Length: 251
Image (cartoon, rainbow, N blue to C red; front, side):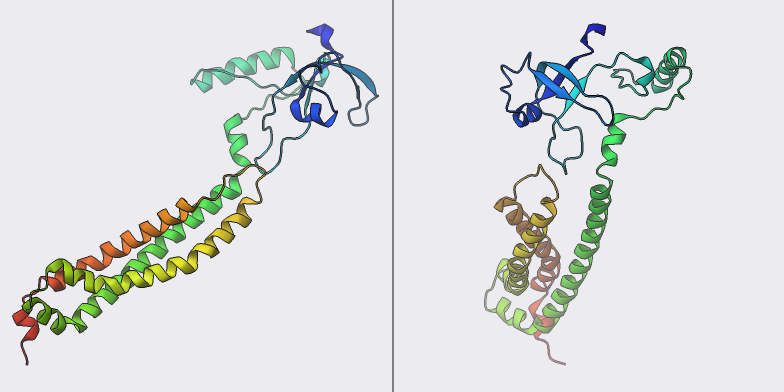
C-alpha cells in the first residue's frame, strides 16, 4: 500500500545475516542504502522463506522486497496468469502498459524461458553427452557382435564336440558369453571411479546438488552387462543351434 514506502520484507538468509530471529524480526529497524541513493531507515514487516531467484549454481543470497511508490521507477512487472491464449493475453497486458506507461516501450519475456536460459550450458552439455553415449554404445555393440561372431567361428568344432557330449544350448551360450562379460566387468571396475570423480567435480559447480549414490553406478553396470549379453547372445545362440555334424565335418 502507499503507506508502506518505508517497510520491507526480508528473506531468512538476510535475517540470519543480521542476527535477527525470523519469529521476532517484525518491527526491526534496518539501515538501507541502495546503490548511490541516500541512506534511509526502513522497518521490517515480515520474513519470507528462502527461495531461489538465481541459478542453482548460486546459494540463496540476502534478499529484500521494498515498496517504491514512484511510477517513474517502474520499468517491469511480473504477471501471473492461467490463460493459454498468449496472443490475447499479451494484447491486453500491452494495452494496460501503454495506457499507464506510455513513455516506456512494452517488451515481454516468459519466466520459464528466462529460467531455462540459466541452464543452457547444462542442456547443451546433456545433449552432447547423450549423442556421444549413443554413438559409443552403437560402436561397442558392433565390436562385440563382430568378436562374438569371430569367436563362434573359431570355436565351432569345440562347440560341436560339446553338443555331441551332451552340452545344452544354455551351457554353450554361457560358455561363449563368459569371456565377453568378464571384459565388461573389468571395464566397469575401471570406469566407475573415473565416472564418480568426473560427476563429483561437475556437481561442485552447483550450490544445490543431488548426492551420488552407489545404486546409480550399479544400475549403469547392469545396463552395460544387459546390452553386452543381448549383443553376444545372438551369435552365441546361433552357434549353439548349429548342427554338430556340420561343425565336425572335415574338408
